[in-house]
Image 1 (cartoon, rainbow, N blue to C red):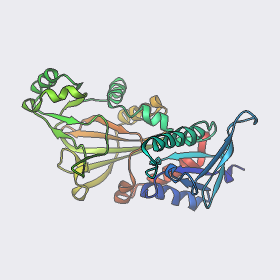
Image 2 (image 1 turned 90 degrees about the horizontal axis):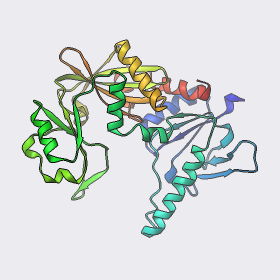
Image 3 (image 1 turned 90 degrees about the vertical axis):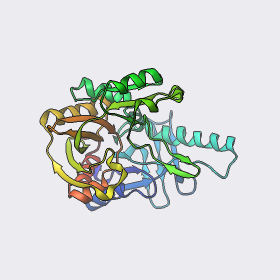
Length: 319
């Protein structure tokens, strides 16, 4: 029976956002099997057969408390999984074991043909390249700030000098420590004299700064769209959540349709978009996080975001 088909929730141990969705699924009586790839071993077992069964893969994923038959999975909520590092092994053995888990466990899950993915990790990865995002947004008619991606110092200086204000953004968030202290790549202003030959080492993203008065975080789950205006007074509102204020807003139909088309272009069913609001009320594309956080926004606004995700996961591939 479809009512007994489980939802797989694949995420790290502490994930308050996933907890909200699981709570809603539990309220509906939808079976949930939650696990983290890093638990492989005694706390996570997986088996799958191919070649001797009519509809591969056939097998199960099992935790100490629950199990799910692979051919009976309703949907997969791919949230914030952590892959094992095998720190107790030598470097070569750890690298070998980690690869076997990623391509064994990951490959088995990717081979599932029936469930709805929210979102499939391969599609998340394809949509996570900022230059690809910028091109797709522009093609769909969204307003994109003038942007340069380059490792040419002269081109960078020329670009900066041709605009009143320019910001630097990382092309990919990456865990980073300096002298043991964790660092985050915030959006920061940049001037032409700051550009030196070190720029040649890797591509950098420079963007004309939007004269913004607020930001929008837009969460899409299926066809449900939740837009929240964020007031901060900061260039990068992520730097201090304690000073933020939130207000649900309605998006112009043209923009909402473009965001839905954007997800469709990448084969995604959910995503968190960041837009900037200028002084005339215009909306500017900034970026998409295919698997962005949203739990704090539900708590701050009361918007039924977890309900929308639970609806999506409950319906599964028939949605």
